[in-house]
Image: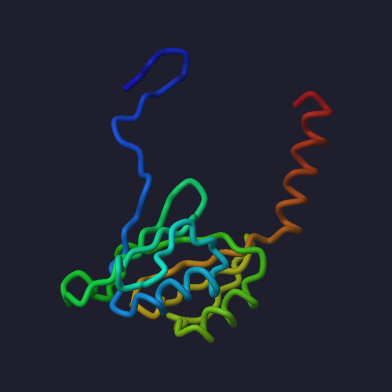
Length: 149
């Protein structure tokens, strides 16, 4: 929906992704300690209520305990993608907390990329940008702007 002057009104805005986890304390620990995301709402007793919200920037990840096999099925959807500052340290922490690599770490020119599974089976994508490439691109853009192009 257009509001004119380049502004667009959204009919819906993604605010929360809910993940059902079988082992609630382990799921919370993985997202908090493995991925380094702050827990914004955490129950004192993870079984009453079995729910936590993790701050992931503009989107909240809600973790909810569930023993139902259908809601906890380990598939490739949804896949959460995170940009990290230190891929190696993030993977070591995540593996120590029950995560598992889902294939090799890849090294495209833009940075490092990896997929892992959280202890509950959810797919997690990790990306560490190539800061040297980013700095070179920013310098080239700044030089182009100085030249008036």
